Image (tube, protein in one colour):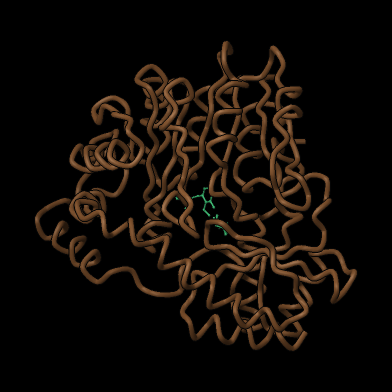
Length: 378
Ligand code: PMP
Ligand code: GLN
């Protein structure tokens, strides 16, 4: 009776990671690179520590880093955020998202969540007394039906959460999608969380369409980013969010008592490292090559390959191999075949996508080669 989240289990990423360890399986489940970040970035952290960046950072983040983030946003998406008032550095995108929800959601407020959805959104809504209003992406191509989306909006809708490029499906919102979203929210007070942690991991010459690009949309939006994904440092847990001053003012009221601030030396290092745009602009090509390497050999397997336009995740349809539910099959793959993935029903409410597994390809070519060899024996 004391639990505020009686239905929440340990996250699938922890569960699958532990299972992979136990069975000494190749781990393509939780999304993280199994290679090192740039040596020079590590050296910048050491340097910052030696220079004395060892005490609390400013509450909203090191100003130098906020300025670099604002510069990048203006350069890529044409919107100028005020680094003093509209940018906050957070403990990963996870904290940004949790803090935004906590700052704005009251008991009974409705939040529209697009399913399948990354697993941190819903518990954050529920623990704050909010009500999740799910909308399911189309089962075959993971596109959204905007008419259906509009039908979910009520007088109680306080917030919408989107994620592009999308984990786990690898789809991205097109310009048309973003315009539909902007139009759907016109005339409301709905706040948008745009989870854009994979903004630089977009393939085949496509563009990432940030909520920051659309002036009406950006006025009601928090855009969230993560250095973990962009610089291969998921363990450093540094992200950020951007939003208009009035919204950010409320955000910081919670942020200051939630974490107060983020690792100082790491922020100093990131501020320097961000100065070179090559450090993030080449990421798409880097992961596109990994995707292609992973998929070229898989073409000979019995898995059906779903399109992947972005992120470092690939969905594989196993319906020609077995009729087992995805959780059961994923577990058997770890035990019998020594390879771990994520069953995507864990991102879902209605268990529709029951024949898909998510594989993380942010791995060395040697790991990907081993993974493919295993998957081709199935
Ligand atoms: N959103 C999505 C869609 C993610 O995939 C992740 C990380 N897996 C996060 C947010 C959290 O990012 P961070 O590690 O920076 O907290
Ligand atoms: N975002 C990562 C993924 O989707 C997991 C991060 C986590 O374990 N919380 O795999």
